[in-house]
Image (cartoon, rainbow, N blue to C red):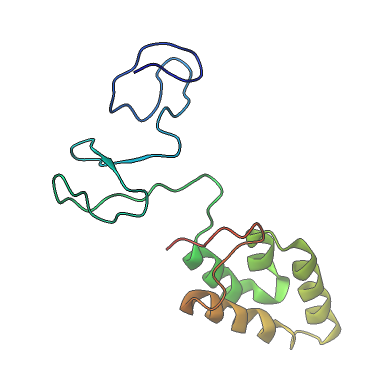
Length: 130
């Protein structure tokens, strides 16, 4: 197999090209145990039976981090900034200041909603990961 970016030869089961760092397997899913190509929606490899690892893209945000930020610093909108909702984060700061801190309950409740899965996407629509 050859790298689609730099054209150098790479192993069939390679996850990245050593020369240029690109992913030759873009759009495909492979078993981390036997390197067999699998269905992108598969949870278990049909060839060897091993549970397939989930690859996280660089932009995926953690549900646990967002929830904890909401519970502890929700009045400052930190969890909303973390998820990419800048406007709502600024509004939460203003509400907390205008209500002399009582508006922080808004962020606290959202932190709980994030942890239980009611709020499950970031500002770009990507699902939050555990």
